[in-house]
Length: 223
Image (cartoon, helix red, strand yellow):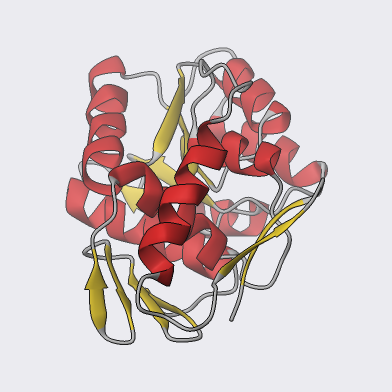
């Protein structure tokens, strides 16, 4: 998964980014003002946006309205120091999906963002199931036929993204855009390497393949 943090407090932004990278394996981009945040939100495919309200150059409400004006449905969680009822109502009416009032607990932030991403992809439960495959997105464990499968961090990230889009063709480009941050050079064969490793581990002792290649189009996770 790939998220965007729009926050002008550099230390807070870096702390949030570190938490998402280390605990969830997410790719994270950071913008430190509203104009840059809006440009990045409109230029890249994110799975969630964390948006501060009090931003230089363009405030968070204006950024939020501009994002929604382009009919983007990316989940947006607003970070606000305001707790007045009227402010929260206006935020939700402007298109926010959730909010947290500063100061907040990083564990709660992680849980809320994960829930937003699941709902945004039509998944209500933290446990994703595709046939006899089960992925627990909370503790990042994988089982097939109730047998645990040990994956590398990147293999897990590829599999989790595919599991959020079961039976859909997911292109190599889409995977690269959602698994790496803004600075990653997206022209390489890393996806093929991870897919090969996943196939080997998921198919061991199983009668049916789970990851299918559609030549020239991408990959499908289904049984």
